[in-house]
Image (cartoon, rainbow, N blue to C red; front, side, top):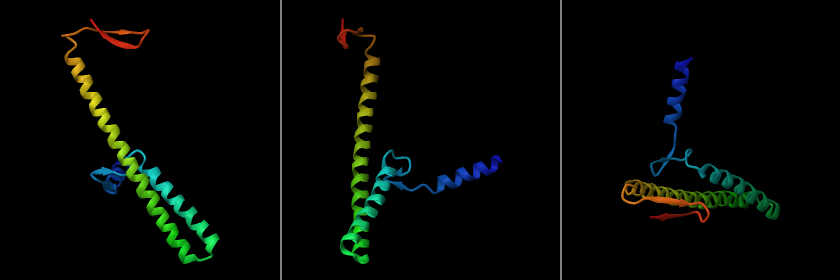
Length: 119
């Protein structure tokens, strides 16, 4: 039983698609971007078909809608995630510097004004 679980985990790790060195599945909102792209492509294709009654045109509009929505949302998602990681890295650096300078300067928290004040 345990061998079966190990083999399944190995096959799942081999099938992961990466984009810029990061797995797409593990990126926070990439999955939603592709789902919105698929549904947007279907809706735009159906609306085009209802308006024009041309299957060829509706298919083209659906595929173009899918591509445009997916790429736009994926780029926006990647930008937001990189920005969040940059802020986390900066916060980690500031927390490290505060912990290293704690012996030099005493900090106290004023709960009424929610500010740090140094003595």
